[in-house]
Image (cartoon, rainbow, N blue to C red):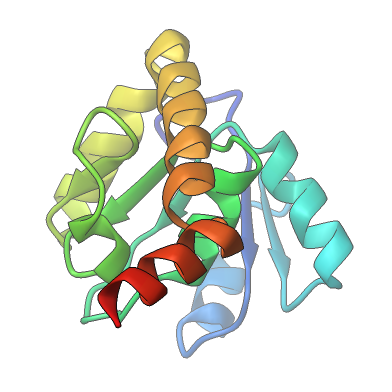
Length: 145
């Protein structure tokens, strides 16, 4: 947010750093939302310029990433998030190391290139429909058995 004067950040969820972040964040540019009803969360994904899941520790899958991709949001995810292992960097998602400098660099790169973001959003949405659609998953499970 500091490096993009017209940028706005919406943080959804809660965590141990929230109180500290609320004290230092500019309330005009950073919005904290502890939780949202599912319909409102899906609407937020639809309108996001970029969805970021900056996991620092192993996350077995990262369901919110798949949800955001379903609605066409371009995503930046760290390589410790399980879903990152199914995706290709620069094609369906922007995948970075779980370090603040790498996350920051990735966000800046994507925010400078709306065409890249649009491409990631479309490819990610297509990927989710092909691989995580209920029928595709059932077919894959049956094939496995």
